[in-house]
Image 1: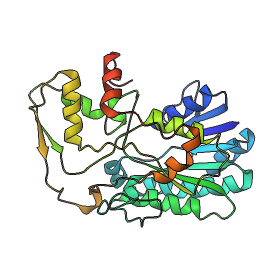
Image 2: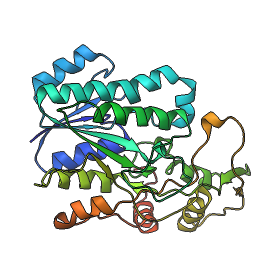
Image 3: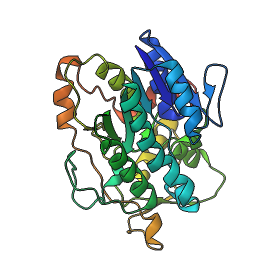
Image 4: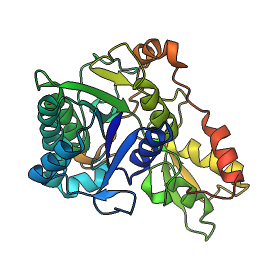
Length: 303
């Protein structure tokens, strides 16, 4: 099978790229700012260049991981974020229709407002920040192209092997715990998150490519363990045998500009995905503390 992975230099994209390559597929990894000998440089906003590249490669699957995923950064560049997160997915769906490939669009639990979890695939979306709104609009654009073979895959906050801890909102908490300089950190103990390993999502997608059952238009993939960011810091402090006295839990609801609000609990209901994967080994999510214990024990915090 021929597979294109966009955002293949990112934390999720790199895991997806490796998962499909390890199964012997012909994989084209696309990157923009962090292209390498293995990953081809392509500006996804250049519609003509994208059409040319995709037409030449003739993919069977395209896994679209590229996005502006940082809510605070999204607020500072709303037009660029809308173009990347909302306009581009619709263009790829049109291309999927023309070139007859399956498009997997990676979306987010932040399309929900966090007030009534768990959320099923048919739950009403109601994003509370610009990032969530642009990803919701990307979903609508992808699903709105009649005749295109598309799947929206919603995932929560991610962690896993990464070039830098700052590449994910979870890995970067290692740096907070390891900073024993005397600086104090106020850490969110209000919002509940379900950190999910990128390797598990990549494995799921590789397994899904073997399924003879057509996937639903929208799928949810999430690990089941709930944590606040403060609780994640406690796990890291325990594993690293470091003090966490410099990390102060903040259990109050965030105040200030509503545009940068985070939803409180966007737990994704994964029962439909579990049913789909029943004959292919299930979801196979690793346990958070167990994975980090093995990973940190290997002598690398960031991968």
